Every structure is written in structure tokens, then in C-alpha cells.
Length: 154
Image 1 (cartoon, rainbow, N blue to C red):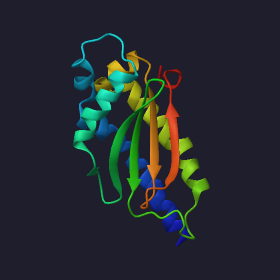
Image 2 (cartoon, rainbow, N blue to C red):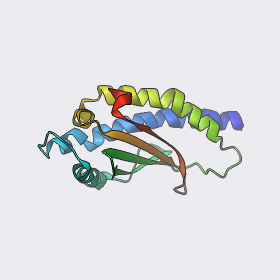
Image 3 (cartoon, helix red, strand yellow):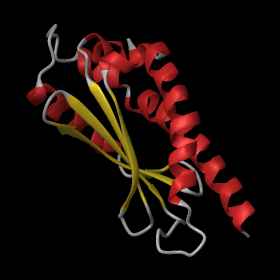
């Protein structure tokens, strides 16, 4: 069971990367950013971007993953919240160390590549926005998170 759970967990985390990509595309973030027609984005502009983006949330991305919301955080940060709707952190076979390993070794590098390459979020990159990704279990408890600054994706 443990190997099956680890395999499933790894697949889910890889799927989450696809979710991140789909979220950027689905939200049309660059169109929202461009609608402000300002060269500089500040926290208040990011709050408006998040508010407009949240009109499309929540939605199921696959059988395991729900995109919950986007929040603007202080310091020019956009946080993307996802729930793994079939995972309970209190289950005996939940392995947080494995989750962190998959995020660090696979999800973060691929997410950085996506941020660098995705033209839909160019305005966010140009304004050095920090991206925060938060993963929660089926009960809304934070399982893991990571943050990517302009230093990571430049």
C-alpha cells in the first residue's frame, strides 16, 4: 500500500504542475494584468487581479485536485491555493517527507521553467511578482507550500 500511495502522490504532484500551467492559461492572467494599463503592479493591483481571477474558482482540475482560489499577499505576491481532495494528512500512509521531496526535486524546477516560458504571465514576471503555491488536504489543512521569487525565475 505504501508504494502505491507514494506512486499516487508523485503522480498527483506532477499533475499539479499541469494544474499550475492550466490555471495560468485558464485565468488569462496576462489579459487581466494588461487591462490595468500600468507599467508597474503594486499590491492593490494584484488584489484586483486576484479578485477577477477568483470569479472562475473553485473548479476541479482532475479527480484529485481542485483549484480553490488566488490571493494577493503583501509584498507583490500572488498565492495559488489547491486542494488534494482525496488526501487526509492524518492517514497512516501519508508521507510528508516524500511529498516535500517530490515538490523540491520535480515540481519546483518544472514550475520555474513554466513561469519563465509562459507568455500569459509575462507582465507578472516583468513586475517581479512572487508566486506562492499552497497545497491543502481534503479538510483544508496545509500540506505543503513553496514560493518562487523573481530571483528564482529570471
